[in-house]
Picture 1 (cartoon, rainbow, N blue to C red):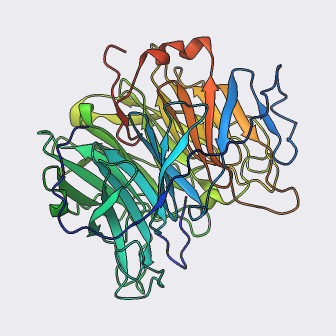
Picture 2: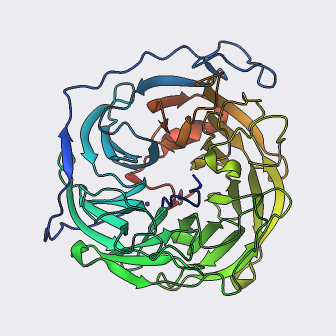
Length: 484
């Protein structure tokens, strides 16, 4: 989600932690079970995806994608839901007020293991064995979970990374914070080559002269190194400048200028990363984890307004970038905006080594018209581990959840969808799926307003994904499916 100028708001193997200097976090004891809302049945036949707008909260879907269960948000974590991470039988769900640990061993009946109250939008989240990381991108009075919000102009405010010990999933412990320039809107977990550390590539943006902790120019990312045996020694080790020329200058009110990155997806096994950096899309060589190098850069000055996120195909020969037109708060899935704005852009990666380039092939956008009261735009998704095809699932806010095939880069097509009707038909109300990710046989969606959704995809084109089982999944740390 784009943050607006004022007020400024600002993801595989470890040993046991050295528990030095605990920082206070409030853990809300989980209830014995979590109440679920009985799902409405998926449409039995073909849904008119072009001209029919569902009624308020009415569920419509293609026959091959159905809701298994929905778990509403619970206080105090009843603020905006954000990103998701997974480990074993657990899902970790970010929320602007903290995070929830879900036991998803029974996908049809997830239960709350812990609710951790620790405000700090967006609380972008990742996990690595016994560690959990949260991004704070709103100025806070201090680095504790009892902090209060401050104006971005306040000199003594704090923003950055928070680190938790999650060996006991029912009682996460806050153990370390690391302050980063301009905060941490998102972060990407990149394992070190020797597996003794992990790196967090911290993305942040939108500097202003009146922001003491976010001064222009801000053309860099922060790299936090976390020693796995001593996570309390985590620290910023580099702030590489990715845009020495300043990046895209933008068009005021229409297209974002580059002033940092919004999100980075790393493909560690291929030493590649793709950065979605507001006005630019970049491809990076990350062989040296502390010194990533930009090897190719692309722009779309015709249709893209805000380069938001990226997804590689399994072969590492394609990358999908998303355009978050309207910052996630606007109705852009309508005839007025059309099919090429607020969409995905598919690029083929050609060449080798430093001669790799990204070549545009096509756009993809959901084919349904949404109501003008529904915020809808391309948002977070993940590759589905399918043999021989490039298929991903993706969140579109109130546009719902879409599964689409980009095996033919020039001719992508949707193969499944699920969505709720508008929250309101009277006035715009923000909501919908923030992140929709495939994990061990199911699709999990963190809905901004409606809570935690579990969906089941049943399609002949994706059955081979059922053979893949993750031990851990941070979507922005893209795994490779060996033999695929």
